[in-house]
Length: 158
Image 1 (cartoon, one colour):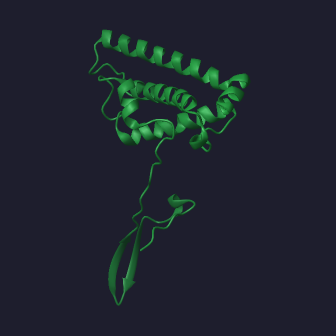
Image 2: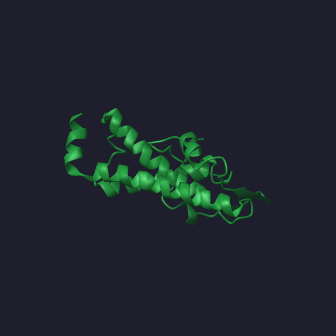
Image 3: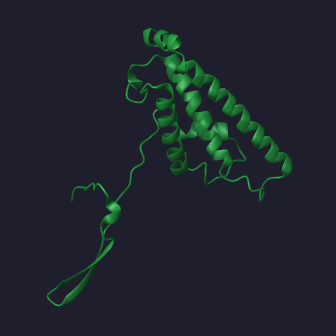
């Protein structure tokens, strides 16, 4: 049976009673959700930048993909250029800059997911905060490069 995609799946009933020839059946609607891969990075690359002490749940594929797609949209809007749709035609140098921004900002979400202190000492928390600051600074430096129009003209021609 082919998959069906619905505009607003939350409005459909999840469980439905059906009676056929006095026999009651319970139909449970089953559907799949698919997370699209981020365009500019991989889950593994984000894990490298998040580090060994990042929460295992937030380093999981589902969380990283959700964070990365939001970061990807942020990059496109902040630069006023849709790099996602035009990714295949971009120069390798531009792709590396996009990768740097997306991995750094996504890793920040992964690290910040759980800094409650239950598994971290106060020094490890300070280390995590320093790591976030370094990742953020580098991401913003790269984002600034992409936002400057003269550099965009250069990169499109490269």
